[in-house]
Length: 178
Image (cartoon, rainbow, N blue to C red; front, side, top):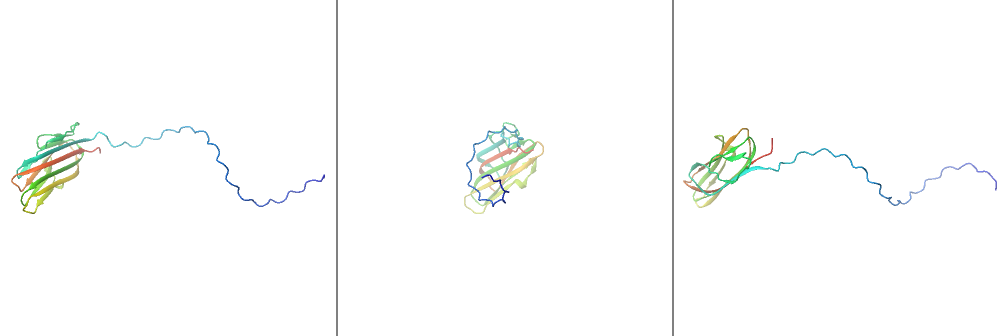
């Protein structure tokens, strides 16, 4: 048959989508990118701290609380001046103290930090025994304090008992804040 081709017809309707084909092979690995910026500095690992402890300390009604080094600060930011006071270099500090004593009658005990001969009542602690029988009283405080210049810290003890037998623990940590 030698006839010619006629005009093409109109486009037909689109058919349904066929099934998903198989995943092709993975391409080659790209080049390594540039190194990103450094992150912020981490918390300093060299902590500055000292602790003081004592058991069966006998004190009168009023006294400066005696301090005995448990763990010394090798940097000398926190150092014992004498048997009652601690020298602190400028900075921010976390201070924790815990005392316990047995009271055999109704009474009280009070401990107040004194910084550069200024009483710091906001950081003091007070406990009172109401009963007339043997009772254990506990004082415990944790606080932060800014030391703007070289300072001396000691603790003033006061009790209604003529003589008290006390166990204590004190820790002081210089914080890494500037």
